[in-house]
Image (cartoon, rainbow over all chains, first blue to last red; front, side, top):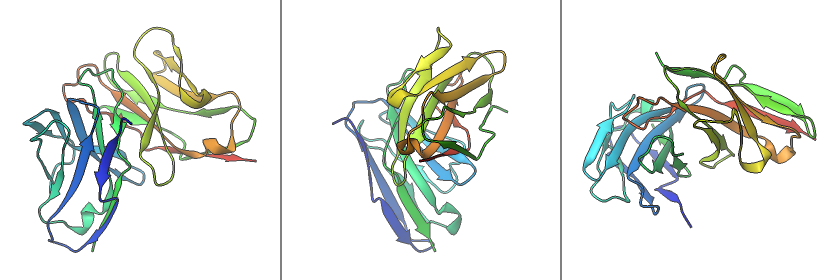
Length: 113
Length: 115
């Protein structure tokens, strides 16, 4: 089954404790992206990647890092989480051409206390 | 600034009645337009898209959307709503000039279909 998977689905952590949210897709997509969803704001892009070893900042990259060492994986790293990073996070992937729809993972609900 | 607006936070409709979820955008050029649906505790699911051609596009679960270039709108419609259509709906736009692949999302509209 074609899918995007994320782990963990739920995470409660404390300020400053490094964490990683994993994302993997099995569709051989070149493009991958991370979004955060906050009430009343829709989804905002954090980082994206056009292909292996090619990553760039989205609209809200502060406090986040990513890596793309393999085509299928695109982990999101929070080196020192803060309460304002409490949010619902989605990973997405697609073929590179802009007219293609993105496929979304199930989401990771992160709470930073 | 490029933006997408969904003017209604919530739309309420009775089962069997037609529904419309509105979306307008402010993007230069001819953007790609998308609708996604989010069920509780689930990720976003693609419903339909407009790239070019016929202004009325059909998608999953009986949904369709009408593109209106002069009004820069892309309203989502369904002739007969089901209770199971109740969910959060997002309109999204990708500018044709974008080299980031980024989707610009509206803030979402909650659709509530009552029996």
